[in-house]
Length: 281
Image (cartoon, rainbow, N blue to C red):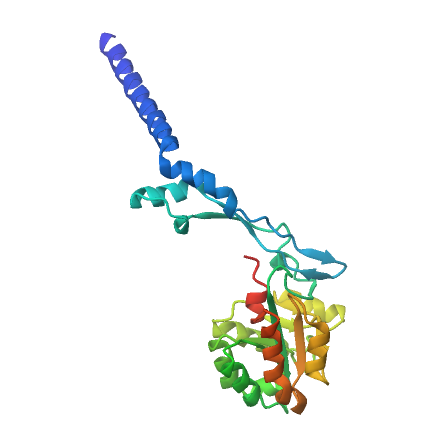
């Protein structure tokens, strides 16, 4: 019996020792200059979450907020022995409504807190995208090519090159008919290329088309502005943060695309692909 109580006493002593050591370590950490500076600076790096804007059957994505992860940041800086805000670690706070949970809604733009816009080029079987691509590449920007099934059939290699060069490819199916059986075939190929993480349909105000795109887990894009003629004037009249502009490829667009890009840049806006524009982080 005596040994039993000695054993209990030893365990109690060890437990108290661990408890005391942990409390001592915690107190020392809280008094560490690095921890004090982290806690003082952390509020300056807090970003409030921007919630998605949902109206009827449309959505504009939100943007995640963030806060400094105090303990992870301390662990990193303690090893280095110095405070440096460049080593802050963050916890991200997602919007309540995410795009992936609202696939049955039309995306009508990016978040206007981002200084970004995105350009869509509608490609049919008569389209030659070489000049468009040359202009984009010369300006080192990325676009979005929404391709018709007839063009897609004869240009698989170009689809691969577009995606591998950070342009996004959208699916127009055949004449915007997402009930066409080949729509799924096109969608599968686009997704398997691998570098593009999101697939896109183009707006078609038909419930069955909407349903089929949703079943494929595609984002459905309803451009903020659709332009066929006088592209530069129309861009100037409509440009704003988060806008998605779609163009019909024609001689007017090819002639004015350089001017359009320069004008957008002069307004301190970045031209990005849809995957970047719709990123919720």
